[in-house]
Image 1 (cartoon, helix red, strand yellow):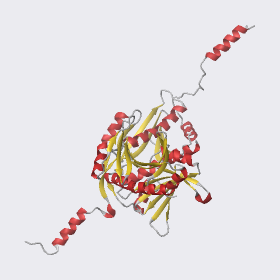
Image 2 (cartoon, helix red, strand yellow; image 1 turned 90 degrees about the vertical axis):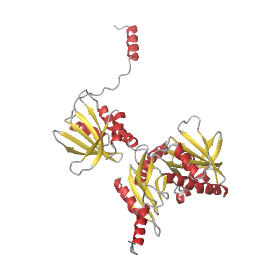
Image 3 (cartoon, helix red, strand yellow; image 1 turned 180 degrees about the vertical axis):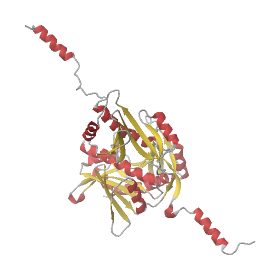
Length: 159
Length: 290
C-alpha cells in the first residue's frame, strides 16, 4: 500500500528531529583530560597544517609542532599531555605596548620574554586540556589564534 | 670551690648537647572541648552535632567543600567528604595507590543518591600531640585535592553546547554554592556575576553565551611584575589598567565556547581560577606581595 500523503512529510520531520542536536545546539562529545601526540597530529593534518615535530631536549613529555600559517611562524606545544600552548614570536616591544595589547585582548596574551639572550614580544594562548577539551575545541583554539596573530602583528606596527 | 676547668667543661658540655625541641604533650584521648579549641585555633568554623554511641561530629568548610570531622569517644578521629559518584574502577585505583585515606561508594538509604566518600582516620590510642591532629586535618585537604586530580577519567562522553545561556551558567554557579549578584549590561546580551570566593571578589562575565571571562582586581603593580607573571603562568592574563587615574591590576581568563563546551569544563574554568591554595587568584596575590 502506498503511504498516505502526510506520511512523507511526517517521516521527514521525524528523521530531521532525530538527526538534529537537541535544543540550544546541545550535543554529546568526547571530552578529553589528556591528549596523545597522535591526537594533536591528526587534528593538525585534518586542518591541512604541515608541521615539523620536535621534542625539547630536557622535556620528555613536551612535543613542539612548528608550522607556517598565513605567513606567520607558529609553534604549538603539547605539554605533559594536559596543556596546549600556541605562540608566535615578534621583535621586542616595550612593556607599555605589551600591556596595551593585554588590555584589549580576550583570548591571547602578550609577553616580553628573553629566549637565548634575545628579547621577543610573544603572543600566546593556552588551552587547559586537563580541564577538559574536545576535538572541536582544539580546532577552534588553533583557528582563533590565526586572528590573534595577525591582529597582534598589526598592533605592533601601529603607533 | 668549683674550679675554672670544671666550669669550662660543664659549659662546653651544655653547648655540645642538641637544642631540645619544645616539649609537646602526648595524649591518648581527646575531650570535645580540647578538640573544639584546636579547631578554633586553626580558624575552622564548625557546626557541631552528635551521633550514636557518644560520637560527636563537626561540619566545616575547607576550599569551598563541606567536610565532617568525627570524634569517636575521644579515642579516634575521622574526616570524611561526600563527592559525586565515580566508577568503581576509580575507587579501586585510588585504594590501590592511596597511603592514608580510602574511597568507597555510598548509597543514601533514604534518597537512593549514590556518592563517593573519601575518609581517613587517626587512632589516638598510641599517643598523639595537638600538632598531629592539626596535620591530620590539614592533610585531608591535600588528599581531597589529589582525589580530584586522580578520579577524573581521561575521556568522558559529555553533553556539549555552543551557547552558554544565562540560565545554564547560573545553575552551574548555584551547583558550586556560589552566591552571585547578577547584572545585565545595558542594551546587549552580556551578563555579569559578582561573587566572593576564597576571600577574593570575582566576576564572571557571559558574553552572549559565546565566551566567558573570569577576573579579579588587585592593586596596581609595576609592568615588569605583571609581565613576569604572564611569562611564568598559563591560562591567565595579568593586565595593568590605567583606570582613569586610579590604576589597578586585573587577573583575567577567558573560555572560548564557540566550538562547544561542557558544564564540567566551565566548572573547572572557575575553580582553577579561584579555588584552593594554588588557584590563579591566590597565587597571583602571593606574587604581588613578594
